[in-house]
Every structure is written in C-alpha cells, then in structure tokens.
Length: 493
Ligand code: GLN
Image (tube, rainbow, N blue to C red; front, top):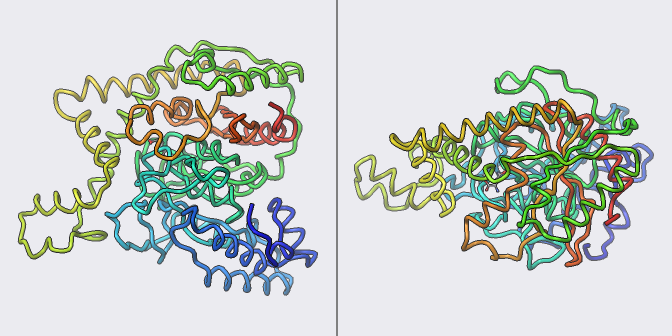
C-alpha cells in the first residue's frame, strides 16, 4: 500500500497483541513504530487524512516508553499504540476545529475523557484527522480543510463524517483511530474503506470533550484493522465518568480477554424491508443473502423480521439531529474564541449583526442548512408537527427494537446501500446523500451498539462491510461474534 522503505523492514503491524509481543522480545520498539507511521503519513499526504501530525511529541513519548519498558515497567494496555483522533475530540493544548473555519486556530484547554484514558494506558497520539464539518456528512467533502481520498481508489470518497480517521487506519497511517458516530460516521467510512468500525451503545463511552453535533445520538467510536484491537481500545475508553452523566454506571467487561470465546448458535434477525430496499445495490443484496445461507448452514437461526418503519428512520434522524445541532452550535458566535471576520470590529456592528457576520462567514453550507432546518422544526407552529412527531417515532423504534431483542441475539443489515461513491457524486443532491444513511441511523435512534466488519469485495473493486447490532451494552457478544465471523466468512462473497 505504501512504497518500499527501510521502515518496512523494521516494523510491520498486525495487531496490538502481536506488537506488544514484538516489543517484549525486542523485535521492535515504539520509536520504530512511530517512525514507520510518520514515514507513511509523509508518503500519503495527498490523501489529506491528517490535519495535524504531532511528530516530535510522538517520537519523544515513544522513546520514553521504550526506556520504561527496558527498565521492567509493566506495559499499559495501549502501550506504544499509535492512535489518531478525529478533529472533534479534545486533546489538551492541541488544535481542534471540527473541520470548521469557525473554530479558527482554537486549541483544546482540556482532554476528552477518552483521550485522558488513552494516555493513562500509554497510547501515543500521533495527530488529528480530517472530517466533515461538525461531523455533518457522509463523504468527508464538507470539510473546511478539503476532501479526503479513499486510499483504495483515489477517485472515491472514504465515507464520512470520520473519513480521515478511517483512511488513517486503511492506509496504515496509524494503528487505531477514534471517530464519532451520530448517524453512521464510524460504521459507514469503515465500510467504504474495508476496515472495522464500532459505534458503542449510547452511554458506553463518555462524550466529555467530544464536540457536540446531536447530543442524544453522539458516541465516540473506534476504527481498527481487526476486532481484538477494537475490543482492547473500547475497554480502555469505556465506562462511567463524573463529567458525563449520560454514561451508564455499568461495569466495563474485559472485552479483549473474552474476545475469542466461542459463541453458541445464535438467533439472528434481519429486516426484510432492508434487504428488499430498491436503494440497495444488487450485488450487496446477493452477497448478504449468501452469507445468511452460510450462517444457517453453520447452525445459527436467521430470520427475516418485518420492519415497517424503515422509510421513517432517515426523516426522523434528520429532524431530531438538526434540532439538537441548531441548539448545540449556537455557542459558536465569534465572541469568546475561534474565528472572527477580519474587519468586523472596525464596523462597530450591533451585537446581532456581529453574530450574523461571524456565523455566516464561519460556517460552511451544510452546517448552515442543518442549523436552519433544526431551527425550523423547533419553531412555534411547527414544533409538534416535526419535532414532537419525530420523538414519538423514535420511541416507537425503541419499543420495536426491544421486541426484536426479546427473540434475537443480533440484527444484521448492510452498512450502506452501495460501496464508496465517486468524489462529488452526491454533493449536489443532499436528499440522496441523507438517504444513503438509511441503514446506519437506526442504531443511533435506538442507542444500540453497531459494528461494520469488512467481509466483502464488490466487483467494482471496492470493499464493503456487514453491519451487526446487539442489544444495549451487549458489546461483548457483538465483538465476539464479529471476531468469529471475520475468521470464518471474510471475503467469502
Ligand atoms: N451521515 C450522517 C449525517 O450526515 C452521519 C453523521 C455522523 O454520524 N456524524 O448526519
């Protein structure tokens, strides 16, 4: 995937476990690992995956970790693991912009809880990655810092909104990355890039220090090459946090230790309407039906369930998330921090004009569209018709989901209706872009965990994934079955 170099001779990466074994037997070092990724990042700058690379800091921390290991200190769970952060996750004293002009050169003044926990387990943060502005998008084309290219076909999008974080793992520019998933922004880019992407249960990982898009949907998620790396990272970042009362008090299982436990035959559901959807690419449909046959042949029960609400999930998602976004983004006004138009002070504008100028200049088109839509659905006269109605649909979806999980252990769906789009393909048609979220928004509306695992190749040369979901806080069984299916069914289609 990248050009031959001396770094390749020194370092290759398969998994955190293998890396740790190599570190302990002296086959490699943290410094060699960081050098390897810095070299790859340099070779692949044109993909535009990273916004900032913390090369000197990363090398220094790697050297410190190498010395500590040599002195016999036991390894932290993420010792020397080279990690990238989506540009919506706060890392103290480092820039964070949500890929928006409105944050200017703002630097975080504190660490997100997830970052605090990564650092406590000795991870090395190598940089922050490009994304759609305020995580609004499905292609990474809405970034104020330019688009990101899919490393497998540079004429295609990597997906979004966490496109840079996905490509960072896909193109071997780090080992693991953190993204955020409000309506699919980890699972869909993982699908388009051929890697693993997990959105945990709402309330599994603290949102403290994650720039808010839609607070009742947002979750930090994880990209990696394999399921055990996801498990190891989740174990570190998950769990109760005094700074986020929406995190469940439930104890975090030791995901990584239990990942290989064999599961008994499972009861698996799929939504009939999803596989019959006219939007679904035929080849994806055929391959998923083929996989269902294999699952049955291997002893699992797989049944179609009626899901009559499929057509409502996208509108419900866009009413509720834009409503929340219009409130969350009201804090960006050019007064206390971030971007302020150059000559605005000289003009001596009234306060509202000042706000208007900074916000009109600072936000991109998609963000403005959503703020307006959200303001509209919350406005007097429309509130009940849109916002209240959408909340009711959300409640129905939760009830339906509970019923499904009374009978089944997991739900499978395609992650996205098609493989990665061509760059620019959907930019002039926001509705078409929104409709492509049809299979991912369900788990955010209901709060359940979802993963995309790269099981398939399309005849157009692109990879795509299977989406698997379990009930709330059942990440352990989700990770176990994903691990088993990756070993059993990868590239079977
Ligand atoms: N594509 C979805 C949207 O544009 C998902 C975004 C996300 O998960 N952050 O809202």
